[in-house]
Each structure stands twice: as structure tokens, then as C-alpha cells.
Length: 290
Image (cartoon, rainbow, N blue to C red; front, side, top):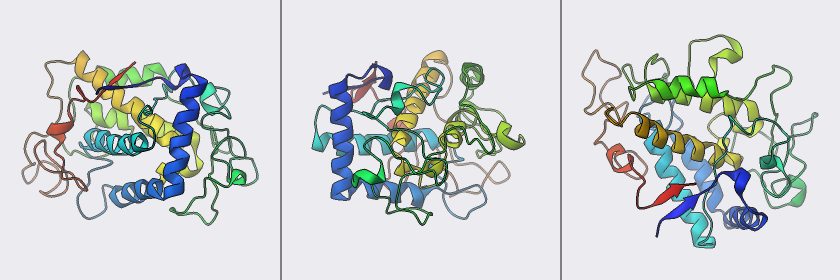
């Protein structure tokens, strides 16, 4: 049965409660932390050895689509009516947005240690204890807008720049690709300071705290950000129906990007599931966006 992913701003109180309760149950059972570990394991940068599938690579979009699906299925084993909502960060751009209410994601971290003190994921409630990551504290951290080095959420204009590009991706197939929808949406640039972060990356930087780095799944807003990124890939395909929905089609040859085994071509399997990007180009028949 096809399920629907809704804009978080249009969730009813009951839908918010069911989504949060399913998140908390996955955390209680230890399943949530498995998703954190998977993301940490597959957060491989340009300069690291080994296969890159999750970030700085063409498979950024299909890999996270499958990751979201696996997570959504786990939620639905708890409550079959639950789906992952999305956060349109070009519209809901302030700490006062309903997203950050006590009934959904909770608010910002406090100034002293960035600890989130409100909402269902506050450490003081005892249900959301950080077990996987690079910090010594066991509490969720946020730092909205990073006031020590201010940054704003992406604008519609910044997103439009990515959506206009008719090419999915291009060599060298990494964070330095200056052409291609994938890298423009993922948000790596050669800029200086906060100007170097665009779109998806800028959202992670704006939220701050645990949303920085490979352990970003510790913050449940990770899923709402990536649901919107997933929706944008869908919109991009509709806008450019004659464009290849994924590139490269075949493994790059020597001298045309990274050596074989560093990235996934369209018909190569992505760990940890061995799913091919080609299998994830469409989500029709599984879920839809409202």
C-alpha cells in the first residue's frame, strides 16, 4: 500500500504524537542507534580510502532514499500509520517554526553547552540518550544559526540554482564537481567561510550540534531534512524529463574521476544493502509526497 509523506507544517497533533512515539520506541529498543552506526560507517569523504556511497558522491540521493525507506519501515513496524514528514527549509526558516515545538522536534540547545532542554528528545526526559557519536555528553545538542559564526538556512534562490541544472552529476563525481544537480543540492562548494555551504549541507550547519558530521542521525530532524532532499530529487526529475536521472551510467575510466571502486555507477550495488541506484530512481508504488 502506498503511504504519504507530509510537510511537517501540515501534520495534525495526533500525527506528530504518533511519529514521535514511534521514534522513541525505536530508540528504546536500540534500533535507532543502529541507523546512527550505519550512517557513521558510510560517511566517507573525498580524501578517505574506500567506496563512497553516502556523501560527496553521485549515490548521495539513492543511498539516502534507501536509508530513509529502511528507517520508515522500522517506524511502521511500530505503528503502521506513521511515515517520515519533510521539512521545507526554504519556507520554515526560523527557530519559531512549528517544527521546533514541544510536540515534534523540540527546540534549540541552551547557550552554555548546546543541550536541548525542550521537547521529547531532551535528555532530562530520559528517553533520548546519545550512545553513538564523537562527543562526551549523552544529550542531544543543537546550535541554531551558530551565533558565534552566524549562518542562515538556504533560500529559494539557492535551491533554484540547483534545480535549474539539467545534468545529474559530472566528473570528478565528488565534492568538487562544479556542475550537476547532485552536488549543488548536497551543497559542497569551493567558497570561503559559511558561503561554502549550500542547501542540504547548510541545513546541517544551521541546526548545528549533533547535525554536524557522520553522527547527524542522532538528531531526529535528520530524517525530515533528508525527506525534503528526497522530494527535491523527485521534483528535479519531473522538471528535466529528458535528463538521465542518475550518472554515471558506467564506472568511470581512468583519468575521468576516481578509480574504479570509489563510487557507484548506475547498476552497481550500494552497501550495506547491495541496492543499485537504478532501483531507487523512482519511489512510485511505495510512497508519495503531499
